[in-house]
Image (cartoon, rainbow, N blue to C red; front, side):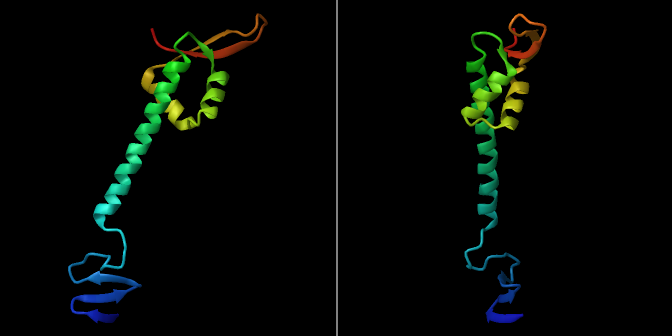
Length: 114
């Protein structure tokens, strides 16, 4: 350890004050800044989730849509898959099967509840 000044010591290239706080004026994030980063991260996730909810409400407002079409539109709108799945669960989106084009194949559809 190297003595820097009264009450400070250099340990692993980080100044540690005698009080036990890291940083020591070296531009390292303080605990307040670290919590601010976590808070903004949580807010960003909530915003993505709410954006996905709005997208689903708008996409399904006029009736059921094929899941593949909704997912494709969501990707074009830069809605993350995880946010879309969370929004689907939040809104209680109903999953059903319907004939696709009058043939024997079935397509999976999403619709708003009620």
